Every structure is written in structure tokens, then in C-alpha cells.
Image 1 (cartoon, rainbow, N blue to C red):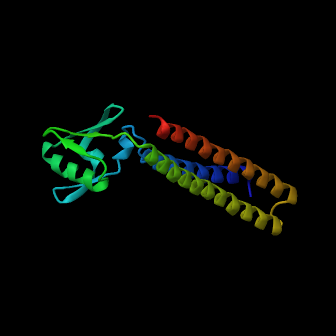
Image 2 (spheres, rainbow, N blue to C red):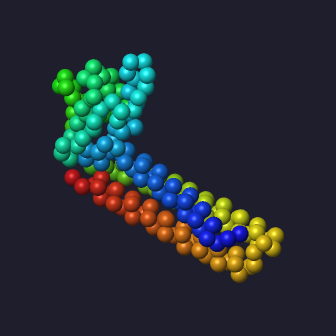
Image 3 (tube, rainbow, N blue to C red):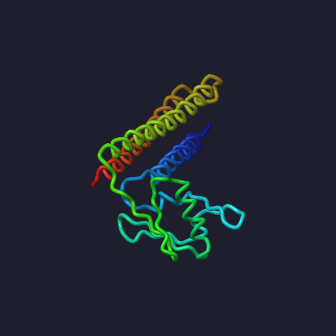
Length: 186
């Protein structure tokens, strides 16, 4: 059992957890326009389903507007329908050439609701990180028990894993605080 291999393996797993958290956060509405709000939309067009980003260019002309310019003008209706189906609160406006979505201002109540969801999501990611720690600690203890590693080495590995866990949990907290500020900004 090599310390570097263990550290790299746990870092990879914890980094993946952080990446998936950031990906989830990009889908949370903050009252500001973001391509993350619609980039996972799939559009049914000519009998096949394609991601929206393959059918159109998506831009953010200002903080409240998402602009969708399809490569094929005939796909406008299908894109509009897919947006409405994906999120009924988004109100796409089709001008015959492009689709614009004006992001409505969030109410104070809705902001607090979103922050509750955000904190639940953050807690689940922190739990995932702690589960990785527990799994690796169990492996280390099993190696110690089978005399593959010494007691001192086991303690050192576990201490290093705890330091990594603390760092990743702190990163989740910082990301969450930043997102909370973004949500509460009027």
C-alpha cells in the first residue's frame, strides 16, 4: 500500500464529487441568465433527440437574457417546445429567427427556498466526501490488521486522508457561500 497512490485515488474521487457539485450548481436559477439553465435540454427534431447546444448557439447578451440562435430556422418550434417542457417557468419568446428567454427576478421567498435546496445539495456532497474517507480508512485499517502496513503508517495515512477530507469539505462550504451570495444579490 503506497501513500501516494492512496492520496491520488482519494483526491480523484473527492475532486469528482466537487465537479459534479459545481455542475449541479450551474443548473440552479439565481435570477441571472446562465447557459447552465438550459444546456442540458434535449430537443426532439426530425425524429431524433439532440442536445440543444448541437442545434443552436446560446449566448447571454445581458444578465437577464438568454439568446438562442438555431443553426436551422425550422428547428425554432421544436426548441421552444423543449424549453417549455424542460422548465415551465422559463418563458421563451420566438421572433421567427431566434428565441430569447428573459429570466424573471426571484422573490425573497423563492431565494430562501433555493438556498435551502442548495444547502441540502452541499450536505449530500459533503457526505459523499466523508463516505470516501470512511472507505479509504477501512482499507487502511484492513491493511494494518493484515500486517501489510505498520500502526504508525496507518495513523499517518488516516491523518493525511482526514486533512484531504477537511480541505474538500471546506471547498464545498466556500462554493456554497459564493452561490448563496449570488442568489441573494438583487
